[in-house]
Image 1 (spheres, one colour):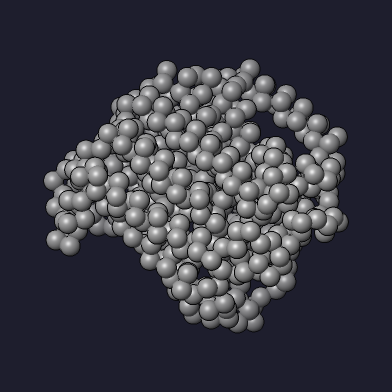
Image 2 (cartoon, one colour):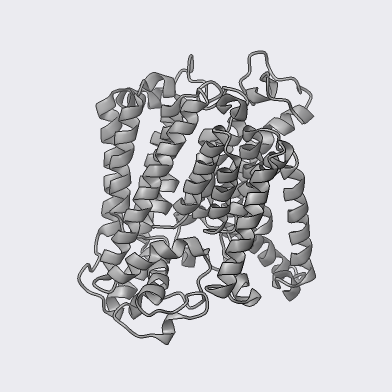
Length: 514
């Protein structure tokens, strides 16, 4: 049943970059020679993540929690030298990552080497203090509201209390995350009463645990698919964006990744009810988890797993009823889960479009109103797109593919805000997908999105031309890679060359297409 769920065995290994016979550029040969030596592979990565740790932790006032010290920590992202240093190190790490991906067959790394080196760089990453985001301190304030002050973070704000952590409590809105994160936030929030940095590292310990469990599940999934697990594991454990956002900056998106991978593993073992419940758990962390739930829900319906679907429906009703009696008593409170108070940010394509409309005197305030007709129309179109893509799911591989498509449309076409850490949800899918196009699109996106941090945002303020160029590069390059096969089919040479591995899965036996 495991192979039946995956539908075929081509994937990360056999349908990847195809490094056999590829000749590296002359300037790349010395780097490839170092990476081919296991000691060189370890050393080059440790140097990069050690440098990133130094950039993030230099100048931190570890034993001071005064408002002035807090401002110093929060304003480091505006430090030009620190920002450029991070950009240089991230570029170096992505060069290593891309070289290993392109010439994987020459490295001959054992899964043990990949796992141990991945664990080492994960520890180095988790030791860093967030630079590009201070969301981790908001997690601590939500945890303290519940654990220390006995208040509901969905209905109360931190300004209602006053304690030693108050200088760090910057988020002045109700908690916008699902209820499953609260049991993780609470112990860390309690520890933050002793020292804010202690609370931060307690929380990062939880993120490290989730990261390790996700890696283990991914290894088991790829092994069951008869794919090269060491390569898929590398794509996950060594992705610089994922390590920067989940372990250095400390975002909670690892709690979305973990139940999704557990759901995939459950599907491989023909356990649809646990799979649906695990996907629902991902949605109880962040709402985009609903996209994967929709995909595998359609798969369950197509395969007539009525008991599993009924179990999901019953559990969903019970959870909603329980939340209504406890944490989320009203519809107004539930809407906070969509973070309606957030505004357009300059990383979003929507922000660039709105700025151009404003300059051309075509902007209308209704375009930003969640209840206005433009946003409601877009919501309807996005819902229709998701329904269309979900109904195309016939195999587990289809569920992976369609989840990626729906999430990309959400991030690029519908969401009014875009942050690089949103892409971390999709990094495991780069290992799971059998499509080379989709895999390289996700890997490219993870690389280009780091460019959003390359220049401090005050330097881009009100510079629409530079903002437009940056958005075109960050979003255009990966989306261009995604569209390339379609454009080639529309061109004069529509037939792929014999032996091409591009989207080989489309011709694999046992994988009926739509």
